[in-house]
Structure formats: C-alpha cells, structure tokens
Image (cartoon, rainbow, N blue to C red; front, side, top):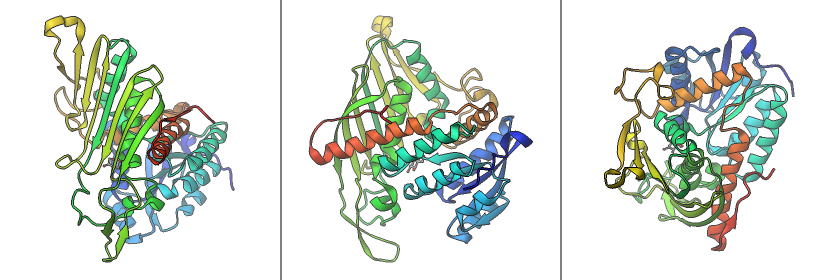
Length: 389
Ligand code: SOE
C-alpha cells in the first residue's frame, strides 16, 4: 500500500473521491457543495471522482452535481494523488474494505452509518483509524442528525445541567415503506449487504442521537426483533427471503442510571421519517422531532403550574450553523445536516482535529446494535462495553 500524504492541507483544497451514487451519494454531493457555497471552509472541497459499479448511474450523478469524473472501480480513487478524502456511501458490506484501504493509502475517510455490518469489521476499521490518526489522517462516521441545529441546542441544554439527573430517554425512529407486503425486496432487506434491517439503518441513528444529546453511553440492553414479512419479490420477479428485522424494539440502561426505550421500524403505518427523542430529568425535559426539525421543545419544572413544554424556534444566527444560512424563522431541512457534516469535516481536517463521531464512537454504537441482536436471540439482557478495544 502506498502512504501518500493527503493533498488537503497543502493546496487549500481537498479532492474528494466518493464511492456510491444513490440516495446517500446525492445527499453527500449536495453537502459538499453546500459547505463550499454557503460557508467559507478553510479547505475547498473539489468534487473529483465518483466510483460506482454502474457507470451510467455514477455518470448521471456526476453530471448532475458537477463531479469531475467517474470510475467503476473504487480502487482507482486510491491511485489518484489528487484525492485526499474518500467518502463512502455504499451499502454496509463494503464499508470495512474500502475504509481500511483508503486509510492505509493515506486518505481521510467519511463513511455512512451504520459504520459496518459487524462488530469485527468495525473493530478493524477503528484500529485502522487509530493508526491513521498517528499520520494526521481524519476518519469520521456520518451520523448526520447530530448536526441539526436543534439537536446541538438540546445537547447544550443537557450539558448545562438544565434537566438535572436524567431518568428516562425515549427514542423512536419510525418509517413505513415496508408496510405493504408487496413492496419489493432490495439490498436493505438482505443481511449479507445491509448487516441488519431497521435496527442498523435507523435504530443506529436513534442510539447515536440519544447518546450524543444525553452525553451518556448505553451499558445494557434487552431487545426484540421482528420480521413481519418473511418473503418479498425482487426486481427480477424472484421471491427472496427477508433476512433482516423490520422492527427492533429495545430497552436499555444508560451509564448514569437512566432507563432507555427505543423503537426502530419500517412498519409504522403513516410515519415516513419520524425520529423522535425525549429526555426527561428531575428538573425538566427536552423533546425533538425530526419532522419538525427547526424546533426544540423544552420543559422547565421550576415554572410550577406553568411548566408545559414550550417551543424554541432554533433558527437564530446564534444557534449552531445558522449564521451561514437564512434570517431567523427561515427553516432548514433534511439535507442541511449533510452540509454541516461536510463543513465540520473540512474544518477538522484543516485543524488536524478529528470531528466526532469518530470510528471509535461508531464502534460503540455497533456494539449496542450487536448486543440488541444477541439479546433478542437469547431472550436475555446483555451488557454492552462500548469502550472495549
Ligand atoms: C441515511 O443517513 C439514512 O439513515 C438512510 O440510510 C435511512 O434509510 C434514512 O431513511 C435516514 O437516513
């Protein structure tokens, strides 16, 4: 493996090579462009090459977002000295191989969540990131909801101690795109490619969000997994066994003693992309709903008989990331988290500081996911050591 140093800090620009061109490829592309056009990042992200096995698909994305070139082999990104960062937007089964190769080839790495399909893969990735950090490289995982301004404010309020001792953390991520038994079989229902179903795809977001906002790690889980529709038909008309969960429900204990209650499902009829987090403490509570993401609800118990949840519009320039956008009250949406993620990554690379979530942070989430699976299989509580290396 070559150990060329990333282009980044030398030239003031950072060549990006992206693997994948579907949903996340589009989201990340606009993220890089948004960071470039709305903020003044210390490094100018150059959209250099998109890699995708389907050349036509990759080309279409490249044309749309102005990527410089296309390749059908992601390894080409590593032989291009103009590429300083590899952005991985593929299904989970390829994350470990690409991320480790990119780190070993001297590149910074951004990888979509879930970080990997197994704990073993995630451990190898975290070890590679640790070695790369010694060479000044950055590796980050794309839990983008951390970068919603209202989520940042929620974390700040908790960190200031406004909720007092946290007693209850409830998180649910609800979608309904598999309610219909006739919905087609895709890679997302295939354990080989996706690792798990609702659990890893959206439960991972709920876990990361709950831990990020509360500042506490999950230490114990008791899970239930369910596959409501056992067989689906693929695009070629072939019946395929669904090998992942449609629904994951799990109870947790957090390190400070709080009780956690999580649901991640693709079976919540009528719910399209509903990620809700509520944290209840002895002095107050906060509540966040991704479907109303410019708002944070705050309850302050000291207000006595007037202490209902009140709405904070998180659209002021003083709120995190918002000075780069619109006047107060002019709302942000789903895509802006990807812009903020790109911005934080560019700032981190320029400063030589690894933005969170690091690969070590995401390895912790991966351990929680695995523990939910183990617990559901064995019908028992499972302890999680997120800091284990
Ligand atoms: C990407 O961040 C992602 O988690 C997708 O993989 C999910 O399917 C989605 O609906 C939310 O965003």
